[in-house]
Image (cartoon, rainbow, N blue to C red; front, side, top):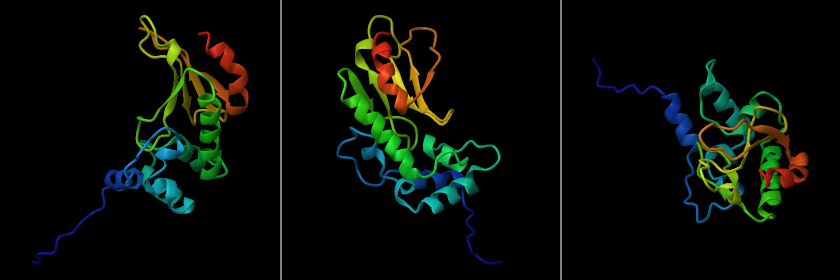
Length: 169
């Protein structure tokens, strides 16, 4: 009998380390400022390989929208996803009333809230969220109170023309 300790990998722990932001953020005012974990900087092939290895058949691993889309072959690259995030941020940050909210799930890019819609009995203001649910990559969720509102699918190319309507909700 040996005293050898045998360690077995714990997939969730391995993924947690891969998505953990190691450098302290001085400011999280943009999606780019949140890209500080291994999955954002390691070679894309390695990131995708680890995700596929750990995600398994149940597909329950917390992951950013772009990694799920990349895994399915719906995005050409991680750089393309980052460009989408940056474009949305540029459009919304140039308009009055839109605020970037950086605190979301593991390794996510954040979301944007329309502050003027946060009034009265509103529980959640009008929000723009990145998603892998469709190839437009964006959902606009109208402000809502007690009953959650259904998201409106859109895309980066349609967002700017949709904003005057969205800002009136």
